[in-house]
Length: 94
Image (cartoon, rainbow, N blue to C red; front, top):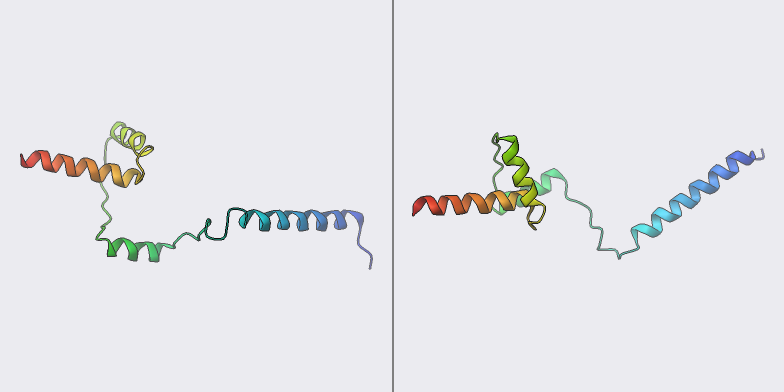
């Protein structure tokens, strides 16, 4: 049974889209886009580092300031909060 012209065009577009996706994933090298860890693996790595999840409620204005600082920090929000807590605790001992 011959294909309709529209079906033929859809198949061409699908092939083109798949080819573009395949070429893009290999564009920057095979190791550049490593698969992200799933939650279980990430939790095991965090536990090995001695990290413990810690939740608390903060004022919205304080969170806004923390997020602004976290944009420039290489470790993100976790690094900013860690540094501020360590500095605060060290000043408290003095």
